[in-house]
Length: 334
Ligand SMILES: [Zn+2]
Image (cartoon, rainbow, N blue to C red):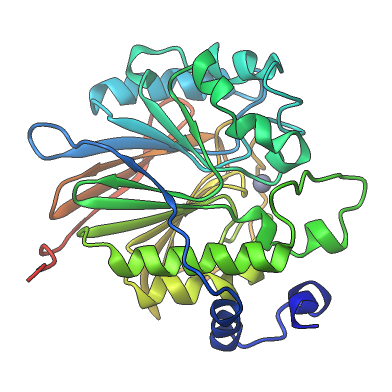
């Protein structure tokens, strides 16, 4: 049956065939949930990106949070993005899990961090009660918390597309080892993945924003421990390329990383240094493409306007490890 092909024979398709098959099998177009985010009065927007963090303050989570507070205040940030693996090791046990306080509320206390947090789910979140992280009860506990499986944030001249990447990864289904994953709301898997890709494709096509940023937990390109996520390379990357996405931002590898590509305009950014890092865990990557690989803790910042984007990565002491800028003309909407 075609519906089992992705599970039984992963990566047997060419990317285009796989996507067209996905689109063919899902007849209706669903709308992704949307949030509206205002830019500042001067037309700029700034935010931090953190990933792989919730460890009750351990493994330098608290120290990274302190520096986020300082940099967040300096840049007058508008919100925070989390690239997933929000709560280690096994997500939340429920909406009353004290880890929500001990790993989130009690850690990110700085005044500048009292902004909305746009979260995606990581594979460790799927090991717990996923629906707890999606529940409005968490927003009642802390109004900063925004978490959905896949959704869009429209921020005037930037559109953010948050994508639930964990269900794409075959090994969690085929070879989960001792882990159990909460697939409620995901099955049948093939249909879920089809719809996710279709919704993203449609939303990117309709986007009029000058900048398009896609956020998922898993890597597309990475020199880190997990490396390339083949399923995303095959199924997700062609959609991002077709719609001129500017940045793909992920966590999962516990490092800070900036990769450009000779055959794609997309910049691949890993911000997975929110707590435990993997010192020395790096694979070879073309040095012309690998602009930064830092195997310690930290986070990153964006400062954007209609025509410019300034990015920086910071270590656990708040030192800038790497920064760069891009500018481009506004897209004509005529
Ligand atoms: Zn992960």
